[in-house]
Length: 158
Ligand code: SF4
Ligand code: SF4
Image (cartoon, rainbow, N blue to C red; front, top):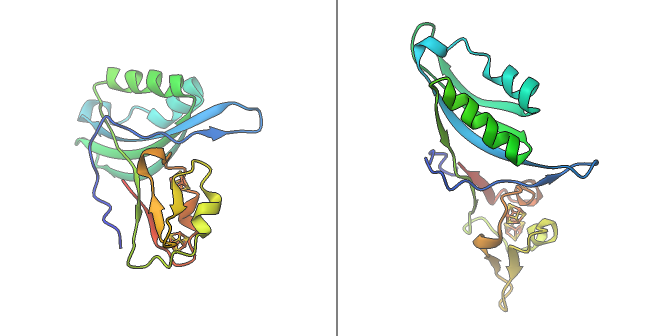
């Protein structure tokens, strides 16, 4: 199983999502460290109500009257995500953005090429020996190749 260890970095890769109304939304994953005095702040409500940001809570470690930690994936317009993060920091909550990247397990990969057909970014190709090549700088971490792989050789590392 791919290591899921978290990497703290401001070099965040974003995922572009084009919706039916042609509005481009992006994703950011962040770790929020709450001091005890703001544990009751309804962060996900504020994100939805004031910034039109959908929150997916990936992990929560919060004990009453103690500091807490929340890992969330936020989806919204890029400028709204940035505004929202500044708002969250304003409560005294430490925000750490999580870099995400795609990991190919070449021990499992059969070089079938299925993932190439779903990679619109052109980050995957077969070389002259028909071996899968991953051109990481082109990867937008859209995650389309993860479910496409028939042998579960692709994972997202956060
Ligand atoms: S996540 Fe996979 S499908 Fe998406 S751009 Fe990266 S390599 Fe291509
Ligand atoms: S779909 Fe999976 S097995 Fe096929 S080339 Fe891509 S990573 Fe390898």
